[in-house]
Image (cartoon, one colour):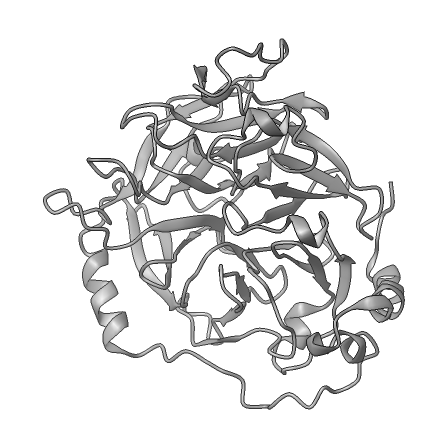
Length: 415
């Protein structure tokens, strides 16, 4: 195992970047701390607009437990997964397009003052998954590349940023695809990088064999990108993962197979207790529901079934353990997760934030709705679609919404 410090990351910038990064990405210049000539006029998003007023009106209809309040934190187009800077609290927000946004609350009133494009001299491809290491390095997982930005909270003010290519490709370029193509990642207690790698099918076809390779997995690697290996497999499409703060076990959401009916199969929250475990796909479409395509094939005998089964097709995405102290004690150490909302269910479901308590013995309690109201029950219209949930520095939580193009802040005041 390689433990990469800020010092060794500087060497990584000087070494691995200069090797073969595309010239149009300006990666060679950035790796040598040279200016790229990118305009100092960085694209930004106005925060005082009719859109902000409309979203605030929507938030008046969000139901929360007593004592909790939800407010608009920032307008952020296409907001997907988030990473909160450990120093000054800049929130880096990924998208399923080509932008990464830096969100800053300069006056510390818990409402963002500025939202601007992060690293405009870098060409991103589906930069969905930003995450931080404890030593302040921002990682961004793209569709088929992993980048590292040392001192991101220092460099983000300008167009040019220090950057390193940690992993040039997760898989060969000819295998790139667009379905389930959006990555998330985190740093484990072992100081290794973990990245969820989806697979391109609704159900993996038997004609391609049962070995999905790196696809349909969670991989891990050293902080310098070396020794990448499959940590967990049998995963249809995970878009949310986090480590339990005490047990150091990896928990992750997984999206179930479509087209089997409104009410099956269930969504999943899983727990990996160690490397090498198989979580059932494609033999199982979600929970213990068998897929039609693999009904005549024997599933792995050691299949690990989910810790939590959620309502079918609600699209469970981002999840985080709550490690703050602002919320009441019953929320501490539990899981907040986002349900993006169904797209092909005859009666829509989801578009809400869920909470799953974790008992002292490591078992789960009942998953309950924590925040909802983004789905108009009368018309079936989505007023918002939550994507990710992250604890903020003050113990509140942030929720991203890629439909409204916004980040919300949920806080608690017992008074």
